[in-house]
Length: 326
Image (cartoon, rainbow, N blue to C red; front, side, top):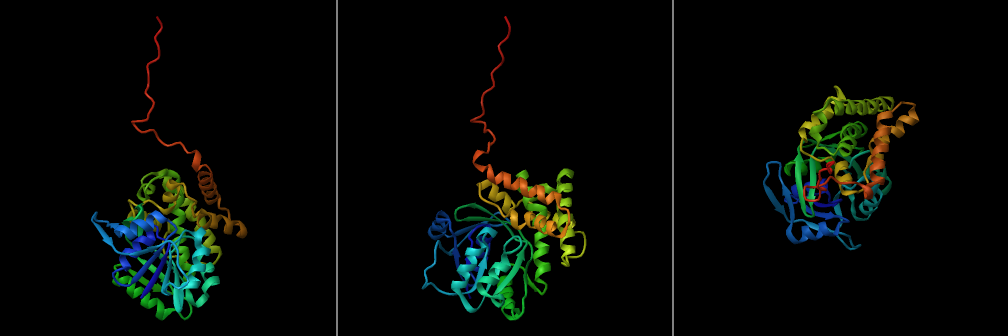
């Protein structure tokens, strides 16, 4: 199978290392240093056990019109880049291929449908977690199932994709309710991403303090209320318990929004907590916690260039005693 992965960040890199031994994989990235490091030395993966392996992967910063078509296009970009990724998918996807989004938030599938057509656009969610450590180097930070949503006429093609993923060590299954699938992942992101980014902590830390747990529970409850009003069928049980379970499964992971904030990059807040706030406003459902989290993340983005970093021991100003009276 010919696979094009658009977006070579943490998740795109993780999937590339797993899939490359089983298919022809190309990574498309806008990061020239990242592409150069992969081309020179291969894509390095630090596994959850701490071992390091390197996989030969073709990394590109642009595609030519005469480049090979892809049977499967995996869209792993940030939500802000979906429209551009969808246009690329439309150019390089074979007629009976699939463009599959594994992104966070709402709205990504709709953009793919516009670009490639409903029969060739699919959405999935993954509980895999990864961190981009440096150009050409990804750390696998958490393991969990990947679930693909099946649209009309896609069962056969998605079965092939799921089989490939499973052979590559990515536990995968296919379900029919795409909306329920996307909202189940959205609620997890609502409960983790913004809080981790604001507090600058790994996922597990959100379950260790009552102050964090209260904020997490309130944000998730608002999202659950919006989903219920829209008729979305969520997984059974308390949604906040499911979010906490993911925090435990990805304990050491730096959430994608935290990685963005640490890099001074724009986040996906509008497609996650901001989406809950916007839909809540239309439905007349109060979402004060998600509104506040959205505003705080936007304030962090806006002030990135003015941020004060903690002093290191080498640069901390030296304290001097106050002069004594004689």
